[in-house]
Each structure stands twice: as structure tokens, then as C-alpha cells.
Image (tube, rainbow, N blue to C red; front, side):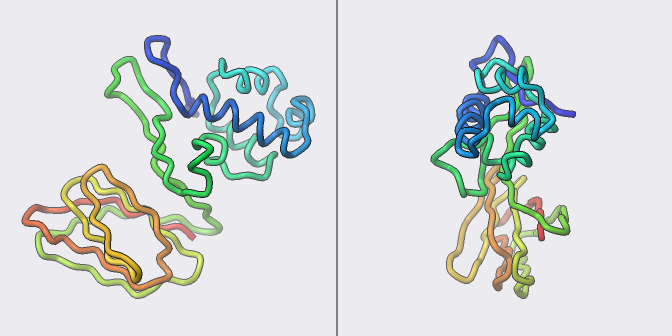
Length: 191
């Protein structure tokens, strides 16, 4: 299982700073002591104390257990407090010895039944129009190369390589390549 960690060479990752204060805040909000949360989550009190102190590497499995015990979303534990409620996370969650080796937690939406992962390519001038999905469906778009024009009912967005957008897909929408270069993007559909 992956860990959210930092190397001694690098400053502590922001996500670890958020985790420390968020865990403490949500635990206190729930009226739980560290011992009570440990019993409810199956995570040791020693581990909880280390996380809240900001000096413990923590696995994603442990974070899932804590989020479930607190009845919150996983992303609530690792997001900046001012970003709560926003499905775009955009936080560096892991960095290797080389700074270019890294994992960025880009976005998250709750899923009830199904998740689909699509790789799309649109050549210059191509357009894909979609009918609305059922209520409760969401999409996360990540542009790999090129520039995507995302046409939604209330707005039109231009996403360049490296950019992400989350939207409810229970509306008419379109993917458009208005450039003279090929476009590649990842489409994650959740319900």
C-alpha cells in the first residue's frame, strides 16, 4: 500500500501539515479522544498521536480507516482547510529522492456504484457532443497533451496540458479540440 511520506531532504509536504491539523479538528468535532478514535478505526493510539503531531508517515489504508470512523471523505483529511468542499485537491502527496519523482492527488468525487476510466484522443477540429448522464454522475478530466475546450451548459472552459476539471455530467456537454495539435486527455466517470 502506498504511503503519504516526505523525505528528510525536502520540507514536509503540505498534505502532511493539513492531515495533522485536520485529523485533530475532525476528531475533536466528533467528540472523540485519541483512544476512542483508535478503538473505532482500528488504528493504534500511538499512530494517531504521531499523525496529529505531524511526525508519522501514514498509509492510504490508514487514512481510509480514519475517514470512515469519522464519517468524512478521505479528501477532507488531506485538503487545505480553505479548499474543503472543492473536489479539486491538487496537493503533492509523495516525493521521491529526485524532486521530479512525485505523486499529486489531483481530484476526488464520491462514488456510489461505478467508476470508469477513459483515455481520449481528439484530432484538430474534432468535437464530441454528449447527452446528459443520469443525476449523480460526475466526471474528472485531466488533459495530458494539447488543449481541451470543455463546453458545459453554463460555461465554456479551456484546459491545457496538466490541468484538471471536475463537473456534474447530468447536463449537455462537449469536448472540443479547437487547436491544430492532437489532444489527449483522461476522463474518469463516477456514479
